[in-house]
Length: 199
Image (cartoon, rainbow, N blue to C red; front, side, top):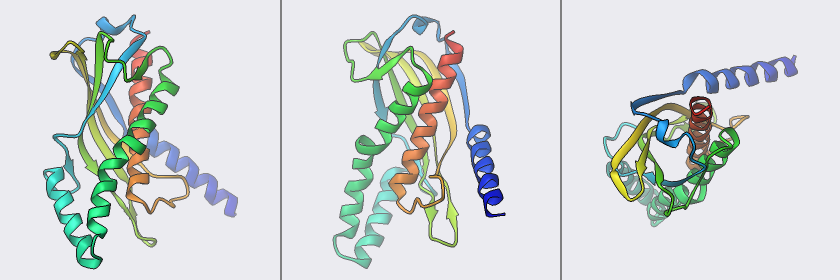
């Protein structure tokens, strides 16, 4: 009986990952990158809403204040981790999962390449896990493919929406861990989309 519940949970989890996410071309054309083997990769968080807050700055100010009220310095530590998680967790997960599903294009620090893919996170839902209740993390974003030497020349824009993030088993009490999985989902979805569209 217990095994049946575990299998049911795994099936539901897999289905939610498959059907929640939406990736589509919203502007431009992918023709220019059909023979590309490498692209420079950048991330942009500058115009991102977080949870119920219109801007990230508002969210950070509120969380930082709340944590510092409970324990001096805790909010400052949290704020540093919030930003550090990008380079340490989110971006590596995005790249890793993208590479797994799009093997023909390498993304990385390649500033001499003709094209750059900029992943612009437009919204982050951090989610929560407080033992008896939980909410998955989720991100929305856009992947802009631009000319590296002239970033104002946008070749294509790809919408990457509804990227859920949670770990199997639900032991994701750390906000960064949940959001990390959202970036993994985004990388996977974008990789699969480009792999299909560039054939």
